[in-house]
Structure formats: structure tokens, C-alpha cells
Length: 451
Image (cartoon, rainbow, N blue to C red; front, top):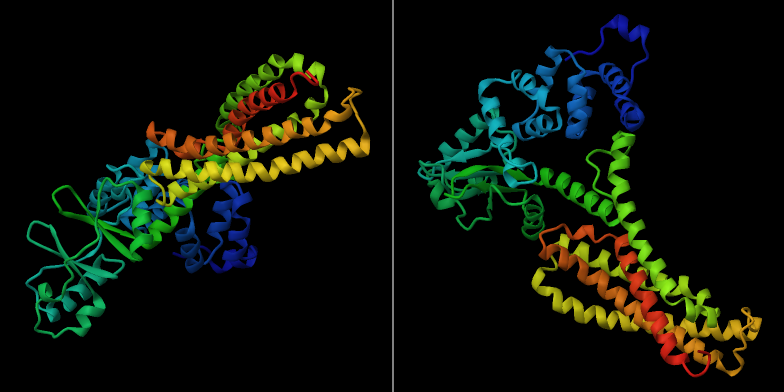
């Protein structure tokens, strides 16, 4: 498709694909369309196929109907389904009308699945063979399929008369086999398949586990529905990782690139978590008020409150991040919670011992360098105060580590996303309990001396 005639090229400096790619994130829709229409046909196709489904939908809806039809027909059914899901509901019917009957039917099948299921990811166009074909017949048939509709030919899938998957054969295997051999004698029948309703994260783990280029998708009766290819999974892995990182940071997952999210939508994504954390923070205030008498008697304890609560929050954030990522990679399952508990108890105690020793050292150094900054006569009890600080840090670090490690398991058990155990949430929960541990240890150790 030509985008410029000679007069246009003389009147307007040509935009290169590299220039548009660099400027794309900061351009509004009008600027993107203008830049896109100044590309050559080859560059426009290159840029269009690189875009996300949301960007493709926005670009298409800004083009004339004739160009919409051309670009829609350039996409395979799985990408078409993604674009239609990203478009407003009222525009989907009009975009579907641009497709031929066969493509429309394939796309509607994909739209019936959730976008995060294997059925929503798959491409219904794949190379298929019959088991009773000879190898020579199969190679000729594959050539015709490739010219007509099949886009990739990593594997050819062997189906019976009812489209049930019998086996798979690579093009290399066919080329190496005798021409009069039957496909059933060449194919591999030990297959890795996924059900059409499998979650995309689980599909991604299968790709990583078996190192495949494509995995067939089958329904409950074993009939083949399509294939999920490795390039589809690359987008899935990036999307899932982005969503988890955003949730761990204490915000709801964004549904579009950062610069394309409107102010109100961004506000709605971030405000609820901040409100929850702010209200939860009042528990910390309540804990400090509850132990106000202790603070009045030993004001030095107040100086170490930030140190104590940050120790628990930091340890908890580390543990939650490690556990959430391990869950996302399939390294941990619900039944592994006990193993994680034992590991993190040991880790919390070890980390707490290091931090506690450092806290004791700080108290001793502070006493010798500055005397008593709070005008409370510590006399010979500064080591006792340092011990209270050190033991409190051990307890707070251990507790914070356990909260961070086990909260994702609790959320998974309740059917929620473990990534919701965000670092700010873990830190807030650790703050309250950390203060209780801190003042309780101080009261026990300092009663009869400074209290």
C-alpha cells in the first residue's frame, strides 16, 4: 500500500520507521496517524506488525475504511482477535465486517475465549496432515497449505477424520524420510498439548520447560483447535511480569502503556491501595500511643522506632518478592508453604541477628560518642538498652520475613493473585507487629531498671 505520491514526498520530509518508533510513546493519536501515513509501504508494515494490540486498534480506528480493511486482512486470526478485544465494543462489528467470511468465522471462535486462555492465544491456521498420506504426498500438500493460509510451518499436525490429534511431524523429518513411507510411521505420537482453557501463565511455563517452538491446543475431546507459538508467549511473559511488578509496587495493574493511561484511570489504579495503606498505618499510630507511657520514661526508645519498623518491612518485602516470583515461575506451589516457612524462619533469624548486632553496636557507639541525648540517666544500663534493641530487631526481622513469605500463599489459597501481597502492604503489616514486639521486649528487659 503506497502512502505518499511524488508530490507529497517533495512537500513533506519523509518520516523514517526509526524516527516514528522513537517518537511513538510521546505522540498522540493524530501524530501517530500522520507519521504512519508518511512511511513507505514496507516501513508501515514493519511498524504495524510491531505494535501492541491497543496501539493497532487506536491506529486502525483513525484510518479510512479502505485502509482499515487492508491492514486487518494483513493480520492472522489470533492477532485480529487481540485487536478486536482492544477496540471499543461498539466498533467491533464494523471492523469484523471488513473480513472475509472464513477469517471472520475463525476470529469469532477466538473471541469466544478469554484473552488470557490458550484458546485466546492460539492461531487456528496450522499445517495439518492425514496419517495415511505418503511422505511425498504430505510434502506437496504442505506446500499448497503454506501458499494458501498457513503462516508458519514449524510442525505439521497429524489429524484423524474427526480432527483428533494423532501426532506431530517436523518438516525436517519429512524431508529425511523415504518418499513412499506413511506419515503415521514418521510422526511422533508422544505430544505436549494444552487444553483450550489453560491459563496463559501455565502455557508459558510449558514452553520454558520443553523448549518448543509451538504447542497444539486441543478441546476436551482431543480435537485440535489451533497452535500457540513461541512469539505469542514472549508477549504473554512480558505482560504477566509487568502486571506482577506493578502489583508488587502497590498499584493495580495498568491495562495500557504508562504514557497512554489517562490521569483519571491512573488515579483509580493507584488511589485505592494508598487509601488502604494509609488507613492501615493508623494501626501503627495506635501501637505507639498504646506504649506512650514506656516512651515517656525512656525517650531514647523513640529514636529507634524507624530503625525497628524498617527492619521488618525490608525483610518482609524481600521475602514476598522472592516468593511471588518463584510462584510465577512455577517453582513453588501451595503444598510448598511448609518448606518456605522453615527456610524463611532460618533466614529471618540469621538476617535479624546481623541487623540486631549492628543495632547494639550503634547504641554503644552513640552512648560513648554523644552521651545521653535524651537527658535520661542511663548510667550503666546502655548495654541493656542496646540488648533490647538487638533482640527486638531479631524478632521483628524474623516476623517480617515470615509475613512476606507466607502472605502470597494465603492469597493463592483464597484464589487471589499472590502479587497482591505488595511490598507496601507487607511493610505496613510488619510495622504494627514490629512495634508491639519492640516495646514488649523493651518492657521485659528494662523493667526494674529504667522502667
